[in-house]
Image (cartoon, rainbow, N blue to C red; front, side, top):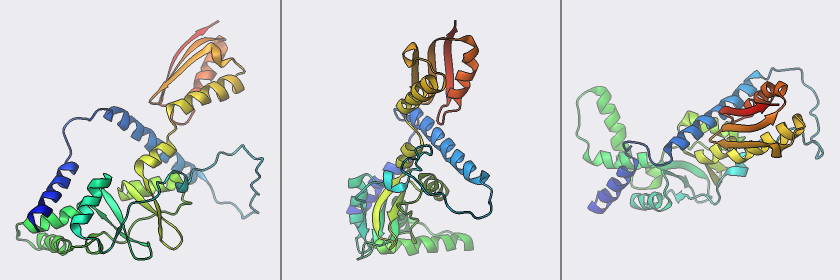
Length: 281
C-alpha cells in the first residue's frame, strides 16, 4: 500500500472512531430512534397477531375506500439515483467515493447495473489492517488472520466487497425493510428491481422518517380527529403543542370528558407522553 493510500485510509478510520460525549442534537436523535423502534415493534406485533383463516376471495380495493391507511413502501422513501461503483473500481477510488458522498458503504454493480455486493468502510479497513497486522499464534487466531489477509489482498471493489448484498425491492413495506436493516445491522439497503438492477437506496433515517410521524402531524391529528371529530369540540379553544412526541394540551373542557380525551391522545401512534393542563368547567 502506498503512502497516499495509507493516509486516505487513516482519514476514513478516524471518521468512524466513536467520540466521547454526544454531539449537538444527539438527545433528540436518540428519542427519535426509540420512537422508530417502537413503531417497528408495533408493526411486527400486528402481523404476529394475525391468525390464519380459511381462504377467501380478496376484497377489491376501491378508490372510494379511504378508511384503511396506505402502507408505506420503500419506493416512496428511497433515494434516487443511488451512488454505486463498478466491480473493477480501484481501492483508492472507492475511498474517495465514500468520502466525497459522505457514505459508509456503497453498492457494487456489474456491467448490467445488477448489485453483486456492497463495499464498506469495514472492508476497506480490513485491507488496511492486513498490511500492518502482526501474526499471533493459535489456530483460531490464524484462521481469522487468514481471512483478513484474503480480504487484504483485494485491490478492486469486486475483490473487497461483501457478497451477496442484502437488498430490498421497491414494493417492500417500510416496516419489513426496517426489520431487515435492524437484523442485518445495516445503515443503508440497496433497492433492486426484479432483475437485481439497482434502482435506489434506502437509509435508516429514510425508514425512521416514514415510520415515525413528525410532531406537526401528531398535533394535526389531535386537533382534527380527536378534538373536532371525536369530541365535537372547537380546536381553537385548546392549545396543543408537541415536542419529540411529548404532548402538552391546555384549555377548558367539561370535566367528565377529560379522562377519555387524554386516553384518546395517549393512544395515538408515536405519542410518548401526555402532559395535561386542562381546566374543568
